[in-house]
Length: 154
Image (cartoon, rainbow, N blue to C red):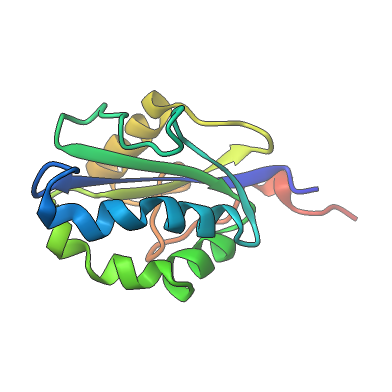
């Protein structure tokens, strides 16, 4: 069993209220795409409220939604994000979300079984924004391996 798993946070600034006509396609498919993620190989956990999604969590402001999850590997997350039906919605993100001047996504390694908090995730996103990619906060474009203790010995 791996010692570490990959955590990810992404945030998005809404162009309109979540229940408005401009965001209808996004909101109408949220449950389906979340279910697709949960059924994907390598999925471990995602942040959700009693309603089944994370749209009620707004730690970055009233118009910023969050998505946070844990995966077995970077490749497992990349397969879901960029090689499943999710990519069709990712390509449409400019219809629903404002372009951000700061990073909107951060990846980091967590001990196996750890469930990150939004405070932890916000700190990782801030670290990425302030210092750029490094072992504690990185991106798909600049990946870092899990800590050495995750590697098999012998």
